[in-house]
Every structure is written in C-alpha cells, then in structure tokens.
Image 1 (cartoon, one colour):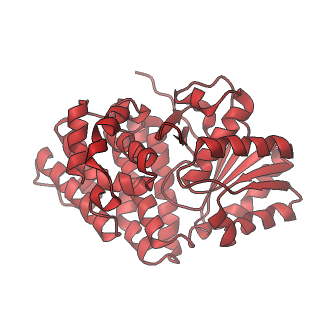
Image 2 (tube, rainbow, N blue to C red):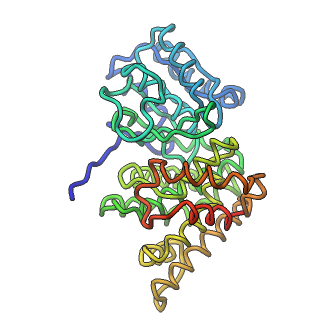
Image 3 (cartoon, rainbow, N blue to C red):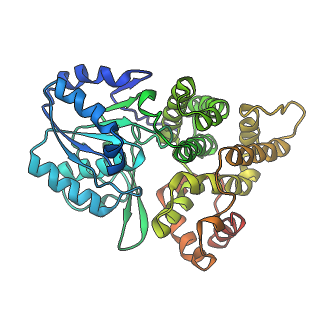
Length: 382
C-alpha cells in the first residue's frame, strides 16, 4: 500500500530555537498573533519570553489564556471569538498539548466554519486551517507537529479525536530552554505520553519503515533521558534529548496513528477530567499485554531498545520483558500504579469501553477487541 506522510513545513529545534523564530514570522508577513496559552504559563513568566520577542520584532499580539488542561469546546469557541475581534492574521500556540490542541480547533473553524464537533473523526475539513505556529514548553504530546487535535465535549463528557491533514501546524518550535520550568510530575507524565506514542506507532497496523525509524529512536532516547529530566529539570542535555524524543514520537504516530491506549485514555480524560499522560502510562503495559499475541516481535524490539538483553529470548519472552520495563520506568518517574488511585469507577467501564472502540485511535490497534475485552483491560489497570 501507499503511505502519506505529514509534518510541519518548518521545524526549529534545539537550545535557543525560540530566538530563530522571528525571521520565519517576518518571511510569512505575519503582523498580529493570537497567542493561545494558559494562565499558569502567563503567571510563571514563560509567556513573557515570547511576548518580549514579538515586541522586539514589532509584531502585535492578543492573548487567550483560558485553555483548560483538557481543552474544551468552550475554549475553541471563545478563542475563535477573540481571534475575530482582534483581527489577527496568524496564531501562536504556546505550551503543551492543551494550548496546541485548542489552537488547532480555533484555526480549523476560522477557515472552515461550523462547530468543532463537525470535524470529529478523520479528514472532515475541506480547507487548510488558519496559519498556526506551535511553540512547545513540554516534551511529550507531539501536538506541536501532528495532525491530531483532542477536544473535550463538555456536554457528552467525551474527548473528540480530530485527525485531519489540515491541522498540522505551519511551524513547530522545540526549545529545551522553555522546558526547564516543567515540574517533575508534568515531566514524567508527558515523557510517558511520548513513550506511549512511540510504542503504539511501532505496533500499529499502518506502521512503515519511516515511522518505525522515528519510533525506535524515540524509545531509546526516552529510556535514557526521561528519568534524568524528571530528577533534575535544569539538566539541559536531558531536556534537549527529550525534546528530540517527543518530536520523533510525534513523527511516528502522526503517520502510523495510535491504538487502544490512547483510545481508552481519551475516555478517562473526557469522563473524569484526568491528566492524559498519566492515563496513558497506566494503561500502556495492560494494553500491550493484550496486544502481545499479535505483535510479540515488535514488543521484543521495544525491550531491546529499552536496554534489555534479548539475545536468547523468544518473541513472547521479549514481549513480557518490554512490559516489565515499561512498568519499571513508569514507577521510577512517579506515575501512579493504577486507575484506582485516580478514583476511576468500575461501573463506568461499559460506556468507556464502548466509546473507546469508536475512537479514531482505536482503528490501527494491532489486535481487535470486543467491548468485554476492553472492559477487562480497564479492570486489569485498576
């Protein structure tokens, strides 16, 4: 089969990358930005690093800082209203996956119209989104470079997966100097999110040599540098290597898609408003245990990439070793051991499982499951 490959037109990555943004903006004739971010990033002064840069370049801006950790339909609608009111000619998302996803929703509606629910699913839009520059302050979601946007519908209590060729940002910026302020818990959760992206992309039914190469390198880097980044946020080498890792993981899943971990985590986030990376980290070993009968060879490779000597192991033994390494890393960076610690209710499993199976991310899982099997995965993760 033939494959499509999606990436931003321009990526700036590495220490000091933010400073290289102005010439790119000038070349695009951008004059006024809507900055989509959150109140915490404004409060700690991180957004000021961006606005100082824009001030020096005489680029005007308005700020929308109401983004929720799980961005909502309301965020999209309110941001769109401000974009129109301020007459901006481009957008900048500044933060982690939440501002990026909210901005993508705003940008999609700005050119396509309608409501954001219209675009739930795969490639529902007709026109490219409003110009978007995505600047990362975390190393995990990959949202700064992907065609995925996850928006919470507050009325239905679900996360909508919008997978659309038109939502890939025009420019992505990954500067590790912007990531040193990340607290340990967020560093751990986003790092495990990136590991999940890599592994789900590697075992995806539409993986290919391009996505495999990105996923494999990301797994190696995360295994080596995540604990260091969590233990010492000022470790620039660890932050730098994690920024490469999460971007590579983004390259992988942006083109190979994901699987049941994300499909199931989206339901937990939408239903209980839980942190996405933590849900992924808890579910990952349980989903891959379910998948192992279909992709034991790929999981054995994961074990090898995470530092396990798999020379004399069968594929099945290697798969089990990978699952144990995932659990060890998750524990080492302080991820809760199960969904019970997040106050998840087993009575909700049937509706969560039903919604997970129709999530866009579920379609490329290596093993197709029934509602009963997905319920059992949730139960095993308690």
